[in-house]
Amino acid sequence: MSTRLKVAVECAVDARNTTGESPLWSERDAALYWVDIPEGRIFRWQPETGDRRTWQLPTAVGSIGLRERGGLVAAMRTGFHLFDLETEALTFLCRPEPEVATNRLNDGKVSPEGRFWAGTMDERAEKEPIGNLYRLDADHRCTRMAGGVKVSNGLAWSPDGLTMYHSDSRGTAIFRYDYDPETGSIGRRELFSSMLPEWGRPDGGATDEEGCYWNCGVSAGRLNRFSRGGELIEYVELPVTHPTMPCFGGSDGRTLYVTSLRENLSAAELARTPQAGGVFMLEPGVAGAPAALYKG
Image 1 (tube, rainbow, N blue to C red):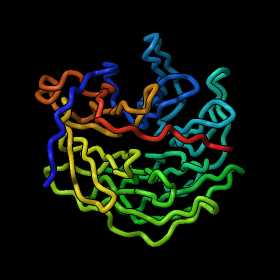
Image 2: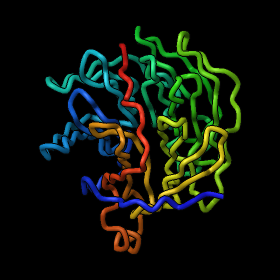
Image 3: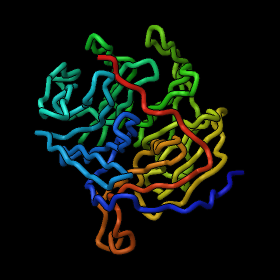
Image 4: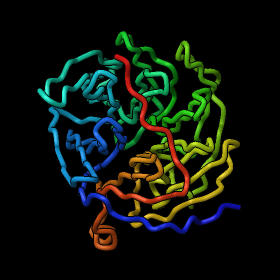
């Protein structure tokens, strides 16, 4: 039996993003980064100063990761790129599916040892399971690691780096894989949890120091917390209907930031949730690991 976690949820940035996604906390900058996917924008917000910065990219950006040497790695419609935050220069690395015009890169995250992972999604209204999951190594080699999903999502790793989580946000299943940090290889896909309708469809994910997996129930206005065994143990009701992805951040790693979307919401839904597309924050009572840095 799961418990509703009664914590205050505050709108940190009333961003009104079309599809806010891929939040990550930079310890180096004491800042939160995130993207608005279809608008091709990257945002940075520094809570201590209130300073905000926006970068405009030439096409949709599904996800980003922090680089060890500075700047970002980005999973864009046109493939994997490096992005220099100072010069705003984009460096193309590779496009994993140039032959599939209806797919684009979506959710992505840096694994604890420094590889960047991102998956593709079918952008058509009637989606097919033609999405794949890719690993981008430090030498920029790109390897297909898994497939058979409509919308690749939910990437996160356990605190010890030995388990990887992944989901299809047009289905109900959250998957887990054994993970080898030394080689970046994954084991056989296993079912971690099957979402019920009232929990929402599985979207972006994050893990905490206790090994629990947090996942946005994008169709139910909830943030769900699962035990290491895949049992739903807690959930948070959010003030928006479509949260997209959580991340841990703040000076002590104990703040959960959650992005959200406005895309395709009706006028009635927007009237009820005027801050849809904003970034929200809460204190769940547990810390999470800082964002890993891409070594490429």
